[in-house]
Length: 327
Length: 264
Image (cartoon, each protein chain N blue to C red):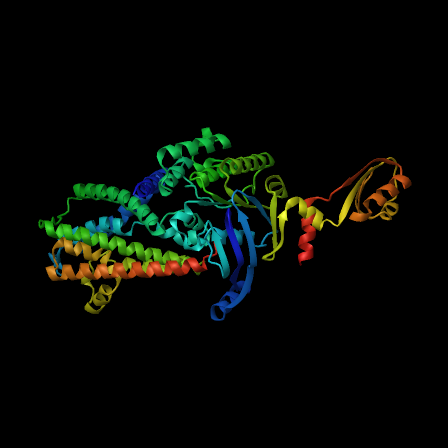
């Protein structure tokens, strides 16, 4: 297929987890007789990602997002299935493959903790065999985008989490990878820094036409960055498609947001639909999608209304619904 | 090649970040050496020869042993078990860098710096204490002992890697290491020349790879071995290197298959 960069078919990754009862006796018993439990971290997952796409990978903790990313970047050996990235089998970890990808983990650092970040960049320059002029250009571009000129020579341990994350990004992107895996890049960052990080990822994607696969707990990351999302839970894909389609497909209700002029007992509001929030003067009522117009008319007729809005439900709510359906 | 220079450079810079730590480590080393030195000094107080060693031979053995020990046993691979367990190994795996060579370069950096200090320290001790030292006049013995030190260093490198690779299967990576350290301290010959041991024990020591860490290179330097035993020893050492290297690569490959890249 043309332009296809990542192809995953029937990927499964099972972990054998060693079960141990708590306490010393449990330890002794497990020495003699070990009990294992198989955990299906990823179970028969298939998808394809084209060049230049920025795809958001969402799911709760332990859904299998990170495991999938690790299989794609060659860290994990798949239990079953085929994975192809840039026509390479990731686990072979061929130099030509590794030179074209990068994995950034929000909770791991490759920077030398006791040295200025610059030293890690220089090491990566040699590891990736980047020519001097290319390196200089790439570095100054990244340093400008992330505004870190002044802290390049500061010991990594003395940087704030946000600054360190920026340095991690530079170290990971200095070789201009074609495919970029971002695992929770904004974790632990404050709101301002999260936004900067998002702006950077978007700018980078546009500038280099690189393919980006991003996981995040923060819906805002995905909403702002990805047109396409893959929702995964319990190791299985629940949804793969456009973010706005997700709303249409899964939101079976609309949300009426009402500002009341005078107090109305909640019982009365419940006659219209499901009252999800009531904090006078504001009430939020969920109604079936098809009945939203009728319900709105009813409200206007029956109650003294100052303002009324018909809204799509929050993506986070929809996704929560998708997850609870999947169980 | 430039990659590995950069790794060595970074390793030095890292060590220099903790100067006090490094200095104290060196002080500890010197004190340990002094204890061994004076112990042997006392033993020779009213004797000319013990176990076939003259006083100057044994003191040379002890002083040289400290330099050889610093070089052969100086390593940064101690943390590999932790690197695997905490999932930081991922940072090596996603970059086109060879893990073995990366750590070898780090070790070379570490060894060189430590040896420079050890040589200076021993030189000062020799100047202060003025012990009778034996200076080898045969250039061949000197060269061959350098080769033997190289073999010992490689041997220990692969041995230590293997201990680190326990991390793929167990989070308890320190107990095998501690156990091996206890055995190694004794059988590497850093405290005394192994051939003063009873014959059966010496034969046992000789069958271990630790034999080639300190004892063997110094014996070569002292010129106490026949040419045949030197060649034999070097060959056996090389076979050990090849064997451990092979096993290390095998275990590494197996380990990567079960590696879960977990951790915080």
